[in-house]
Length: 423
Image 1 (cartoon, rainbow, N blue to C red):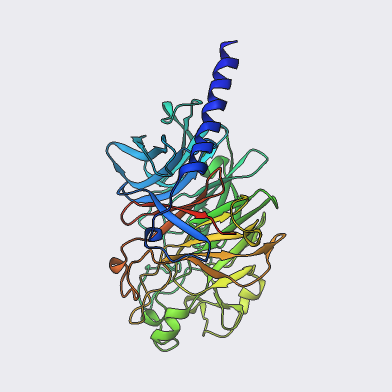
Image 2 (tube, one colour; image 1 turned 90 degrees about the vertical axis):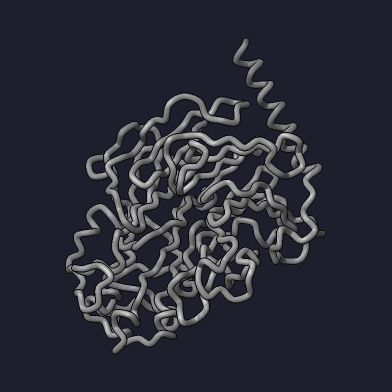
């Protein structure tokens, strides 16, 4: 009886939160300095949280944000809009693990720290998780680059974890001019791909219990299971410094434009070719990397690598992808993909690129049209010469129960909330 009463109370509370949020949230006059399509508006849901990475939103509107560095004694931030004005009134820091990955799944908050995946139990009606963290997956190496562990879940009880490569191109001496690529690349044994685990089995070890679902992915911070299509998608951060290490093959312009950032449809057994290959968007093909004898033209073994479903300009750093299923936005956005581009650091002497959220229309499992910039203005300046010029950098995406879109910024710790109020 008590359980039933508690369930009813929780349901009433959740409904009230959703109703209040829809009814009284008032966007800011300047749309929080964002540039949006006609009919859209925005507000700042929360600010100065810390280095906010990925985020997720519960059915009652509570928001959970991962931090790359713990703040106020917590690695995640729990936020609640109690008065229904569209902004967080209650902000609580919790948990001993910081990192990038975070997902709400089966009544738990799952957190992707750099060396493990843990979960915290949620109690219905309570904002802050209770109890001690439970380790779900472990055994990941300490890395000095590409160490983040983004996570997502399918509909069959599985968890997927990106394990980035602690390397630029698997050279014998990383990021060193003249150093050859290791062939075969030993890094791929436990890095440079996506691993699958059970979503509820504690203390799974990557090497013993994890299953390498896909390989040849240098680093995929953006990863998400598309429940509508029952498919896994990811976006790859492409390799760096082509002109710096191979000036005889690439000039600065080419190095700024190569390789493409790849949008991947990830199947069991996919191999996208890193470190041996990169995708050239101008040639519309994968070509052999110079560390492995490439000249910028020939494909060699890369003719056998899996191609992306879409290519974006180089070095824009895609950090999250969300398939929109809400009813607030116009029909063109339904089941399409929003992608947060964190912004480049390595296009100099050209201006940096990215620092915005784009939209890709989908039909079924594949894009059905060109990508377009959906939300810009995060950087706060017209031209970004170095990442430090940017005031805000988009990192994570989440969909609220009302269909609004949340965007996290890991520079100043701001959370944006985007609405549609057009006809």
